[in-house]
Length: 345
Image 1 (tube, rainbow, N blue to C red):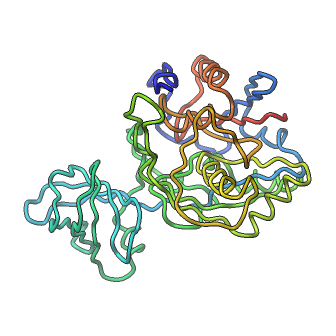
Image 2 (cartoon, rainbow, N blue to C red; image 1 turned 90 degrees about the vertical axis):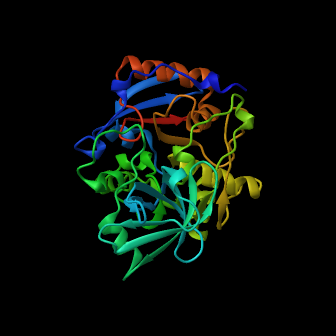
Image 3 (cartoon, helix red, strand yellow; image 1 turned 120 degrees about the vertical axis):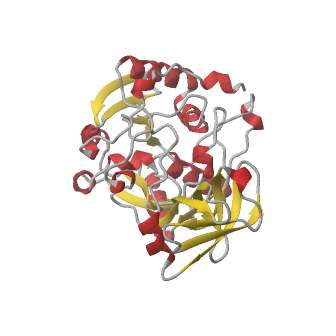
């Protein structure tokens, strides 16, 4: 399957550079692949589409202020370091720019020297293993010196760092936000619960794959980077019960989808308590096992994310909806508008 099959024309001005003032002010495109219908609504209308007995599944990962700007100790050259994942102790896998300047033994200094990182290993695609030295508590130092790791297509500075964090963010570890969750407020979640919708949480720490384009011409030749996920016994039991009682499991974002489908694939479609690393790559031809619907943002052309959504909605139907979104001037990507896709509306 050619990657070009997932391309579409997107005017640059539709790439949302800043979040809206109110989280729930986004638009919501509602798709029913079964009926072939497209509705143009607002995100707060979600309460009209979720029913008592449905379960909304959210990713409670918390984004680290993982982007560090420092200088190489011996030359003073400016170096950017993006924390990707913690390996052992204070050693992290990082994305470094410009990577060619950083070799084993190179040291990068941040701030007034309260944080230093020494390169302990060289990997491909600009990645380096770095061991950090500091005084005090690492996450407090990171909160002081780090910046939110916004995607490369966002050129504007983020005035409020919390706007790249969901209101339910809890477990530190992501290099990027699970952006479909950014639309929710505590008030909207309370309104859904009052209607009889249950809310469950999983954790998936978003990693390098979010920033990585598909370079292969054939989809099958692309490999995903692994990301850590975790689901509790309580969440697994709630989701299984939802299915058994006829409710729908609605995944908020591709990170939740990848977690649930990874776990379901290992246990014949039933969900169980689990944790580990997933590199699942979902594209058309994949048969969904765990979810009945999804809420997701509008994704980049030729990205693994639009392929994942196409596997659920159907490529032709989804791309026709994207064409409408462009015509109707929906906002795209991380700070953009959202879709609800479910067969039973």
